[in-house]
Image 1 (cartoon, helix red, strand yellow):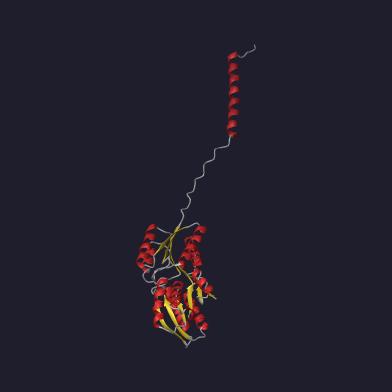
Image 2 (spheres, rainbow, N blue to C red):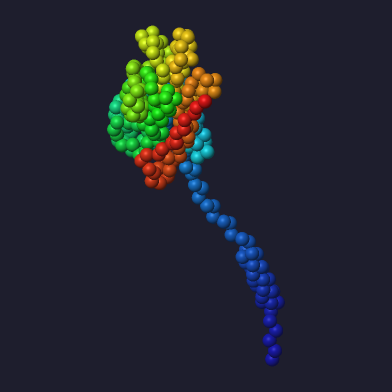
Length: 319
């Protein structure tokens, strides 16, 4: 006896075969599709660091050059700067530095109006964990990471020696001093007077303060000229004062009788040397100071160790 399968059972079998084949095809297609990649977490860009710069007096072209050197370095290194002008006012500088501290700057570059008065401001920055750097002029206290400046003592001595040599080591000279509380005035004056002590026939007949000011340099020296008929040379602690003294001598008709030496080599002083009005000026590099100040601060912010004293070369510009 033979058995013949029913039509219904055969049809079901065909359907099962077809369905199985379709499932295999679908599975193969799904395995061929690449999985969707998991998006990587996006990183938040690091905020730009801000460095505060407190400058004693931007009316002085020397400090304009210093600021410009700092600005160039800041742009190159990707940091921002906030520059405050104290206008030779120690109290104003203290308020400005405190405002920078409150703003939360990453570092502070300070060119002190007064070496003693600035100490409390530096200590406030220390307490806030903000690294402090002094530039051109030093501070009498507080924790300073590095001081960037020329050797003002050596510069004053350089000026004194050149003036003495030009006068054949004999003559009466006048010293016009800068702001008394600044390290620049103290060091330049000390270097100059050390040089004078080496020449027995050189006499500093007058030493008066003219506060780094062109106007005061002119008025103070005009009074000195009236009181002293015999003046052979003048050294001023900066170019503004010596240029004022030149104008006073010109007005008194005594410009040709006196040799003038300044300090800083600002453009007007270099022009005066070329014109024959100034004997010489000691050349600092204020733009280099500004550049080094920013570069040094950025190194420290990046965890690097820097020297406590960073010198900037001097040179004597003569006729």
